[in-house]
Length: 420
Image 1 (cartoon, rainbow, N blue to C red):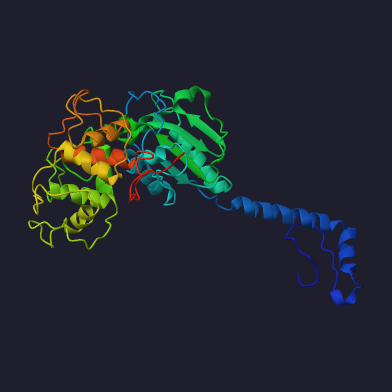
Image 2 (image 1 turned 60 degrees about the vertical axis):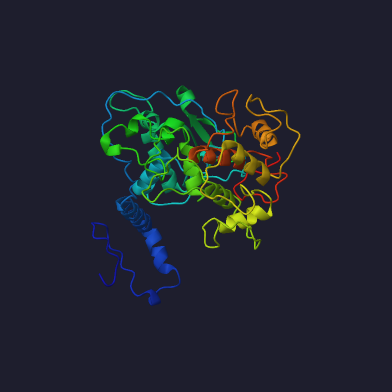
């Protein structure tokens, strides 16, 4: 109606005329006198609430879709704290990260942490992941809580915390609480660490889970991805971590066919090249003085610097013999020289290492720092050829040994140099 209020109901219509014909607020007074204002407000509120209720809620993404694993399931993971620094993302953790990002969208966070950053952490072994999600955002908190509920749910076979066990998860920290596999019966407990983990969920994995040895990976469809960059280094290889570390940091490269050849001997040329790479390739214009090494040789820059530093010498005057194999004793002497030839260590516990041998002090220093244990408890095997895998293990242990570089002229960027 043009001259009155109509609510399309049986309510009375109160004509108020043109607002200019009434005193100020007189139209409102008419409504108040009639009691109609309360009805109008009530109806408006009902309509507003109905419109809000009708809005579609933001849907929380469904959890990951997985196969039926059957009733057999893994034991709960026990605690396996970090003991070394590897710098390699483990394949099971990489898959877990990809699954989360595929299901809920890409975000930041990561798996690895630098060797010198913070204290003990499975991040330093590539078997922890931080899923960046905000506990103070209601939608993000609902996503995280929903996924964690799925991860810790009882499956159709009655297995408690089923998916966490199948992934080999050791513990989770989120929003001021933590869940530990070895105390699964206690559920979520208050987390007392300095970081309440309100901006990310932390997942730490057992070694079996990190290396895809748990039941999640047993079906052919979920076959594990290769453990490293080389076709002949299996996930179960004793030195898979060290070999993968060396490849990730371009210290020891593989063959053209994609293999690593871990048992092949290391040549003198290869030895100086890999040590030079470990040391971040310092430059030198020094004439190495070897007639059997051309300026265009791939290891020539390494040899120039190492000859200048007195780390290597020739097999005789003017002859380097780049293709000759390196022995364990010779390689130990090279490492000792790179570290600055520190002294004062006790005699090595090997019957085949005597003070008359040129690598005696080198082996004593390496043993004292846990870098070598010998080929047997009583033999170092100094005259044996060092294999590519053994050389990588020496380099890895040297790099990750605290205080090993105090006397060195050049300290690698990868080295652990903390004095704490």
